[in-house]
Amino acid sequence: MCGRARLSTDFSEIKLVLKLPPEQPVPNFAPTYNLAPTDPIPIVRYDAGAVSRNLVIARWGLIPYWAKDIKIGYSTFNARCEDLEQKPAFREAFKRRRCLIPLDNFYEWKKLGSKEKQPYAIALKDGGLMAMAGL
Image (cartoon, rainbow, N blue to C red; front, top):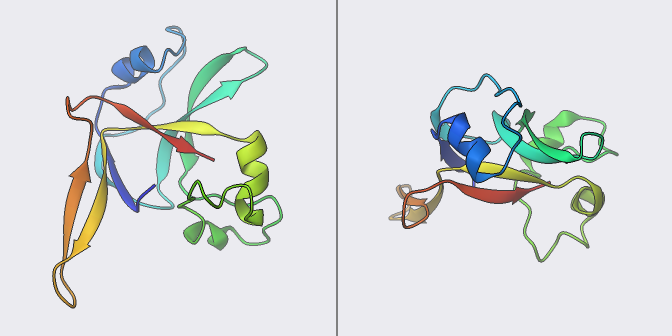
C-alpha cells in the first residue's frame, strides 16, 4: 500500500459492503482525507471465536513480533507481495494475521522536478469503497 490514503465512507456502508454483522458496533473514527503511516485506521479482521468479521481500529504500520521498538512500524508500513514470504518482518504476519483495510482511495506520487511531487488519487472507477490487503 502507498503512504497516504482517504477514508470518508460512512461505517454503515462499510458494514454492508464487507458483510459485517449488522449488530456490531461501529468504531469512533472521523472521516479523513490524509491517512498516513502510524495513524489509527479501521481494519476488518476475522474473529475465529465469533466466527465472523469484525471492524476495529489499529495502528498503520506492522510491528513484527520480534521487534523491540515500535518505531520499526515506520519502515514496515508497506509490504510488497513479492517479498511477503521471504522477509522476516512480514512472514509470520502473512501466515497468521491478515486483514482488510477499507479505503475510498490511496495516493501515489509523481516527481515533477527535483523537489516537486504531484499526488494522484487511485480509486475505483465508480468511486465506491475498496479494500486493500493488510497484515
